[in-house]
Amino acid sequence: MIKIKVIKTEKDYEEALKLVEDLMDRDPDPNSEEGEQLGLLSALIQDYETTAFPEQLPDPIEAIKFRMEQAGLSPGDLIPYLGSRSRVSEILSGKRQLTLEMVRALEAGLGIPAKVLIRKPDSENSTEYQSWDDRLVTEMGERGYFGGISLKKYSRVELLKNFFLPVGSPAQLVGMARKSHYRSSPLSDKHALAAWAAYVFKKANKIKMAKKYHRGTVDLQFMQKLARLSVKDNGPILAQEYLKERGIVLVIEKHFSKTYLDGATILINKDNPVIGLTLRYDRLDNFWFTLMHELAHLSQHYDSGISLFYDEIEGIKTINLDENERQADALAEEALLPRAKWEVSPARLIPSSMAADSLANELGVHVAIIAGQIRHKGNKYVYLNKIVNAAKVRQYFTNIEWDK
Image 1 (cartoon, rainbow, N blue to C red):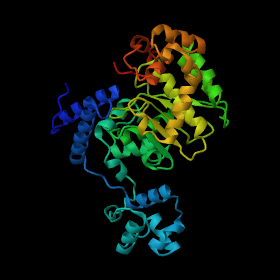
Image 2 (image 1 turned 180 degrees about the vertical axis):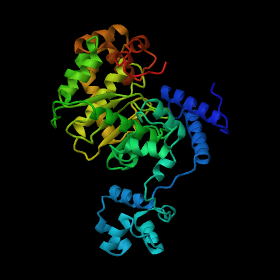
Image 3 (image 1 turned 90 degrees about the horizontal axis):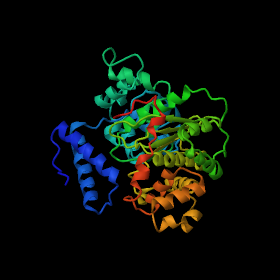
Image 4 (image 1 turned 45 degrees about the vertical axis):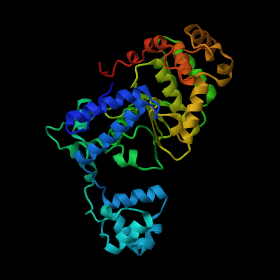
C-alpha cells in the first residue's frame, strides 16, 4: 500500500519522485487504484515544484523568435505588430526595446504573454541557465560532461554555456516544436533531456564515420536483417557496428534522474543520423524494441522537418500517442514479430516458454525479443518473466558506469 502525503520538504519530494518512477514502471491503467495514485502524486509534485522552483521567464527576444519558429513566420510577418521592416530588425537584434503598444500587439496577435515581453532582454543569453537545478548540473559534472572544469572554479552559467556551445542552446535542442518531438513523461526534466541529447550528439561527433547515410537505407527488410543479429553472443555490439557501416551512429548513454527516457533519434546531421539509447531497463528485449523504434523514425520521418525525437518506450499508453509514434511502433513490431506470423502462432493463445522459443527459432531472433512481444501484444505482463529478465544488455557496454 503506497502512502501518499503532502510534499513539504525536499526529502518528501525525493520520496514522491521515487514512488512515481516505481508506479510508472508498472504502467497502471489510469482508472485503477495505482493509476489514480500516480495522478495524485504527479499533481502534488507539480504543486511543490511551482513553489520550490519559481518560474523562470524566457528572454523576450528569444520568446519572439521561438514563436516565429513555431508558427513559421518570417521577420516581414512581424511588421504589423512592430511597425516597419527596419524596426523589426532593430527589435530582433536587441538594438531597440519594445514599446507598450508593441507588447500589446504581440500579446494579442501572437499570443506571447505580456509578462514575458516586458522583461529586460538579457544581452548575454545567460538567463536560460539560471533556472537549472544544481543537482542536475552536479550530476552532469560527475559524469564528466564538463571535461576538466568544475563548479569549484566556474559558475553554473559558465559551465553550461561552455557545454552547449558546440551544439547550440538547450532551446534549440528541446524547445522548438517544429524541430523536436516528445514521447515522454510530463514529469521528465526538460533540462536533463537537453543535456543528455547534447552529450549524445557530442559523443557521436567524436566517432569517425567512413560512410554517409543514404536516405531510404533503413526499411523493414533492413530492420529484420539487423534483428537477426540478436541471436549472436554479442548481438548489441554487432548491431552498433552494422549501423556504423551504413552511416548511422548508435550511442549508449544512461538516462538522468527525473527522466524516463529510453531512446532518441537525432537528425541534426542528416549525413550521419544519431540514435541514442539509455538502457534504462537492463533487458535485451527493451534494447531491441527501442532500437527498432528509433530506426523506424529514421525510416519514416527522415524528411519530416523534425530533427529530434525523444522516446519513452515503456510507461506511455498507446492511446496517448500521436501518429508519428504509432507509425514507429507499428514498424518496430513488424520488424521483430510480423503480424502475419503472430496471427497464426500458438503463442498468441498460449504464452508459454515453449511457444516463444519455437516462434523465435522460426524468425531467427532472440527468444527474449519474442517473449517481450508476446507480453506486449497480449497485454500479459505476468508471463515469461524468467526469459525476459534473464536476458541482460548493459553487460555489453562496459565503458558506461552503470548504477548498481
